[in-house]
Image (cartoon, rainbow, N blue to C red):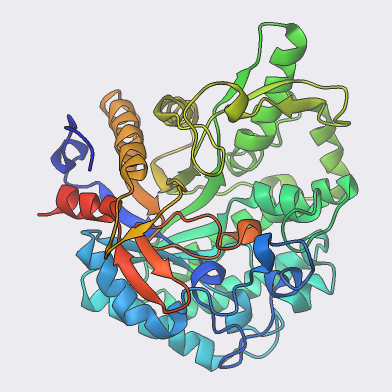
Length: 449
């Protein structure tokens, strides 16, 4: 374990939410059970070379069959809140059409299990696993997805809104647009800059549409959306690097929160974004806006960027953390509590943001089982550094109201497969055995009543 820390749970206040976050595709498995249809990641994982080690999520943590004992682990770790996502294709096998009642029943059982243990459930409506049936019709590039998403969100709101009051509409939409439809590194693996702007616009529209659906259908709902964000530094004071940093900030931090706040897309920092007007219909500017109760920020690392003539359109490149002599995780991401503090201050400066939830934060390290233990000192230190930064921001007036650790247990980490372990609980994917890591034991001690 680590040395002494200089803060306690009580320092964050009695009204501060403590939880863990998960995602359906990463933990559920059971991809062909009980009427679930295929999603884009099922197809993507079958393409040779797309997922490290040829891994797939057909079983993963088998949370679909182990959810009861896994929710018990949430309580054992001391958390009072559990964030999970709904698998769209488990509810609607093709993304639209007839509702799959077996899918509804699974999430009802999961929600009821949480409530029986006095754990508050948080639902994420969309965490990257688009039904393959919708992708075959154009996916996020097809404007019809506004209707498909509204229908899906309405079904979820009516099925679960009587018991679930905390909702996140989209998870990291920038990753969907950038990695899924532009670079092709994530599912569905489309690779074209021409996809980027229409996909961004449709995601931003659905972000607001989903909020409206929950507001209409769920009494006393607490509604947010989750933005991936990293504080951006310019590599030097050179004007070209400074401008590159502003473009990176527009893409990484401003692109989805500002339309929701009624500020429009940040074309003032990145003129290319002005071309998004080609995909906007009459009334869209108003429909992009939604008065969220909170904004979820998902911060793992800071970035340093410099100008580059080798990257058309964006004209920038990141200076990798491993070349900057800074502490890094197993993913090569910079460990920077200061970056968490800086990004909280940046988002808090928006007048339209009421509250902030840190809806994801965590770290991957090379974990090793010793006996029946996993001594992940570095991960525990990571959490302590970032929590200290959050508390510093909170004490300076930033209205941060909760923290959801990523993640409950090791899982399918997208293109990294099972090579990257982020969990507070170690999972042996062959035996499905769970082992609480030292970082999980630290949280249990920290959060005990």
